[in-house]
Length: 134
Image (tube, rainbow, N blue to C red):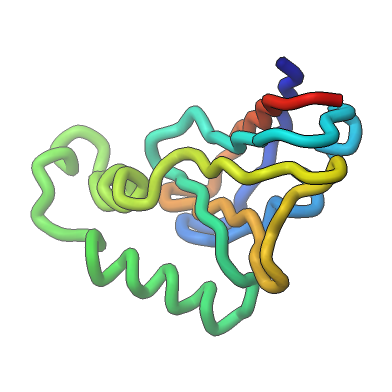
């Protein structure tokens, strides 16, 4: 089962990065023709999702997360003041699984693989695991 890991560095507390091109390039190197690819992050304060990379939508996504689980009177804040990041990450999730067809990510026209940093700036590790046939 082929797997690759790469890192990304964020420069703000909350930001969204498009990982699609990096994921697609690593997938090509894995020599998987058909199957599934799982992209995951082993962190509790960032998350992954698939959607359009459009500036207004990125701002709206961060605003939505702030409205749902923004800073508040969270009990975890007594430890390290980042409960909002943990809560938002748990709502979105730490992985996405996508089909691979003809050696390429099968995404819709506007779909992109996006990482949401919720407690940066930080360096994040991203793992890609492919299951399929060459």
